[in-house]
Length: 141
Image (tube, rainbow, N blue to C red):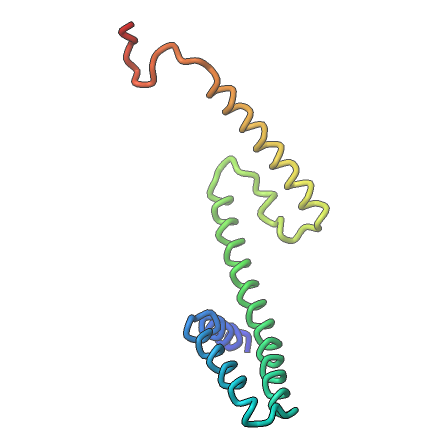
């Protein structure tokens, strides 16, 4: 059942994101709006669009969530593979997605500090004057 739902949600998400689906939705809304005067703007006319859009929105929430969950898991697996392939990388972050918000904030702060230290080191290296021009040739002056 899970494979069937995944396959259906992937196909539905692909169709929902297609430009033709958007055009069809606009045409349906225009057709509904144009039919208003002919149906005397009745309650049935109003309930038709309200019910239709509510049902579609309700179903799309689950489809979009399923697609995002699968994408997120795939990205985590790919990142885990990259971390595992790096010899000097810290493997303890491979399960970061299972940690609580507080622990994630601690990790984010630690990596932010590490990035700022690296940025400061690169700035001081860039500020060091070179004894020769960038071309590597001695100055002719």
